[in-house]
Image 1: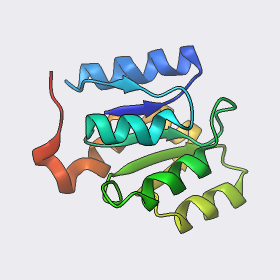
Image 2 (image 1 turned 45 degrees about the vertical axis):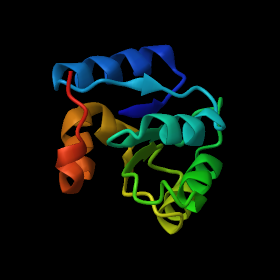
Image 3 (image 1 turned 180 degrees about the vertical axis):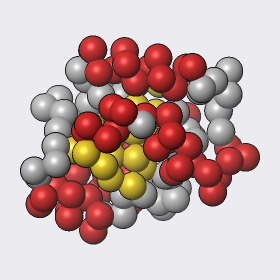
Image 4 (image 1 turned 60 degrees about the vertical axis):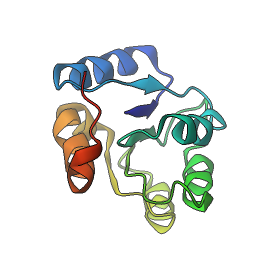
Length: 126
């Protein structure tokens, strides 16, 4: 599982939720690391914080979808609920699922499993 989240407290919460489900995770801290690590690691999915000031989530998503080897990578994105334009643009770029930050916080593992379900044979377990 590749996660693009810089907020250390939010990352720790995400890490704990995913590890409890048996997932291994790798962190991308910059927009350029997202496609590079996705190509190198071939993760089961990407979790993308669209509000992270350390990376441009929309540009990272566009880079992923433009890469001929990565267009089917499931992407679970989360964004502040009031950012309607970001929601719409992420959908146009092909995000698998986008939810509010609050929903993501309360249902992290369940949401991750929803986006990887079609690719369950690729799930990375410990």
